[in-house]
Image (cartoon, rainbow, N blue to C red; front, side):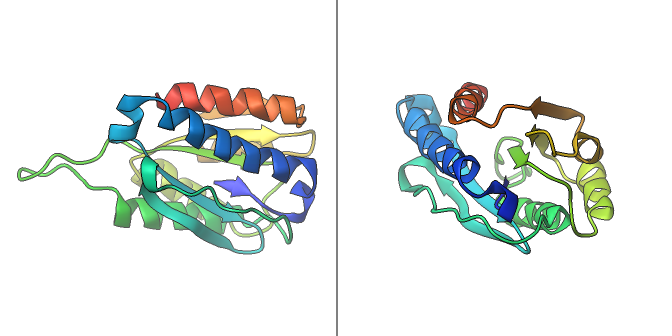
Length: 174
């Protein structure tokens, strides 16, 4: 989940775009990841949108991201819960389901919509590991702690810091 609000304009949004491309390229170089990893991209600004549905690595195309609007974190969390329910196969007596989803949420600000109920719903009812990343000095890490127990603070939003972060994400997925 990528914050694409107006405050992400310039180097931050370019770094996220570059990071998604690099993540995809790195995973494509790992035969096991090609077999079992899927990627999806949800963005949020004034609204939340799923730019790429859950897609097998070989078919994944990194989307173009643009920064504008406000920070609708609640809308993004509601969309994440909806897409997990619709796209992730559950294990049943007849079939083996998908692995538990791993979601990364990057934001540089504070939510501008009603986000609390969505955060509580995700934490209690959605089988997903969410790693939240508070990017920059203005990110509200306390809000993110309501979404997940796993909150990283990345004060430096330089392209090099984003590159290191996405390398870590790649290693986590592998």
